[in-house]
Image 1 (cartoon, rainbow, N blue to C red):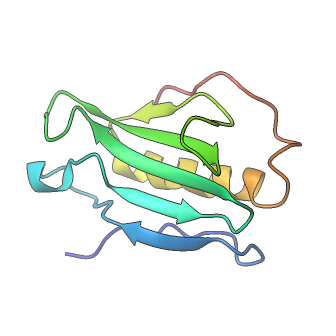
Image 2: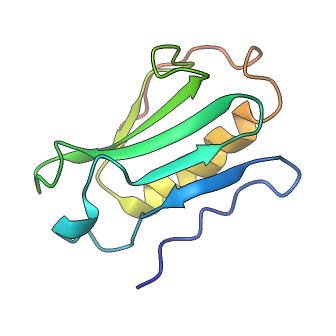
Length: 110
């Protein structure tokens, strides 16, 4: 099985560190370490499933700069892996150039 294509912006320096986001939600894929994207400006997008391997859980997408405790926006939660991939693309586009310009926003529920 192949992970979903995250389709990161081609003009950015974004790099996928790892990607285990699959279209199905098999328990083996529902871990706290689903995907990590380095946007090239000390900003990262982290995706995990919480609680780990709990079928009642959800994906959590977090954007942070340098350190986990320096989050740039509130986490986004979703149970739909395709929606998660879409949100990753949007966040990568928004934060790839200048994280300072992207203001803190309320989380989107999907």
